[in-house]
Image 1 (tube, rainbow over the protein chains, first blue to last red):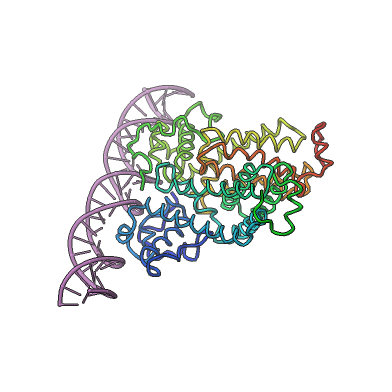
Image 2 (image 1 turned 60 degrees about the horizontal axis):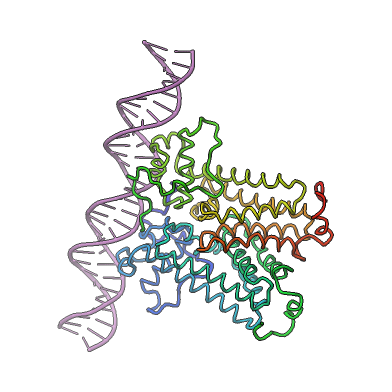
Amino acid sequence: MSTPREGAAAPLSNAASGTAPPFGSPSDCACPPQCAKDRILQAAQNLFYEHGIRAVSVDAIAAEADTTKVTLYRVFESKDALIAECLKDQTRRFWQWWEAIVDAHQGQPRAQIEALFDLLANRICRKEAHRGCPIANSAVELDDPAHPAAHVIREHHAEIAKRFRKLCKEMGAREPNVLGDALTLLVTGVFSARIAFENAEQVKSVAEAAKALLDSPALGAPEAAKAQRAKAPRPKAP
Amino acid sequence: MSTPREGAAAPLSNAASGTAPPFGSPSDCACPPQCAKDRILQAAQNLFYEHGIRAVSVDAIAAEADTTKVTLYRVFESKDALIAECLKDQTRRFWQWWEAIVDAHQGQPRAQIEALFDLLANRICRKEAHRGCPIANSAVELDDPAHPAAHVIREHHAEIAKRFRKLCKEMGAREPNVLGDALTLLVTGVFSARIAFENAEQVKSVAEAAKALLDSPALGAPEAAKAQRAKAPRPKAP
DNA sequence: TTGACATGTTACTGACCGGTTAGTTAACCT
DNA sequence: AGGTTAACTAACCGGTCAGTAACATGTCAA
């Protein structure tokens, strides 16, 4: 097997330093800045994202966090619990990102969706996003449905679909559920494709794809709504 | 860590028996039916798909293949080489599936695309596809770009995009490259979503999404071509 | 000063990992 | 009969894994 991590002896592997999951690492924690728990959580997220969950040992995490395995196990019950905490933290930051975009276009569901995809397309092309979505990636590595992180993964994806469906409904789409699910597939698709494609630019067409779906005669908003959308921000929609 | 595999002592784990990746397992090999190499290749694909590459030991593969680790290492250079062989085998079977569908609608690029998505939607809902795409999954677990399987993964995805772009061109699409890439994203998306969504049916809208994209005024075929498509099979396209 | 608390240090356990060595058995070909 | 080939058994190697035990240190608050 091609060396998983650079041995338990790895003191300060900067293999992952400078790299972080696409929606950032923890910084807003209750405890004083950069307490051991914070550093461990951040190191784990970076290493998990960069190399995969199973490829990273707790020794490597502790080393990257500039602490020891003992401290790690004092703060987290197990590696599995740490994994779950990492994912929770990442979903929290993802939804912060989402909310900020949605808030910027209140009452304009179509503009909200477009902005989400425009900014996603930009973000996914950035170098630090080269391993796609950390949550979806975890789903690949965790086969046990009883794993403490499994629920986080499922809930996250269900929430994306739910919110897209709702936005599509507000937009007055003909088929809000199908359209919402189609947009969800584009999101999961762009993350997955980002890993496997050499050229990061190739996945950028996700924004155009989303707009094409929104304009779809079969799924999108009827002409009336489409004409309306360019004008004043409608309050909420039917 | 939640027990990776059920110990090296696992003799005949039927944890994966009866489960196979979405595009099947090897059966058409040169050597006599069910030689050791065949059995190993099949067992590895099943176990890798079900539990992930890193979670499966070579001991477990040998046991599942009803042979020994020694035989495995006589036939394959290393676990990494075995991984690469598994992926090659799976891409081969994927393109067999693809070609069969495309051949059934020769000269009708739009019908070819629609059929690909219709059948993909059906296949992805099947129980044995519940872990998405084995090739995309491997990309998550293999972080080393020098891994013997990395090239297989990249080439596979590039080929999908290339073929979709070509079909879109033949279809006379306004933006064949963007449309082709959008379809590619739907494919990667439906595989990824299949893992994380509890309800398999939710990803089925991929076929409708694809049709909506094909009908997109901005990306799809102009009205003329669209009217034409229902009629006689055009020979090749512009 | 005295605790309490978070953290660090060192060393360990038992299991499992990928990979190897050595020797055996059975079928087939010449 | 002898040789080749492919398969088997069983034990082993050095290393890594997740997780633990026992003890030392620093710091801050009362």
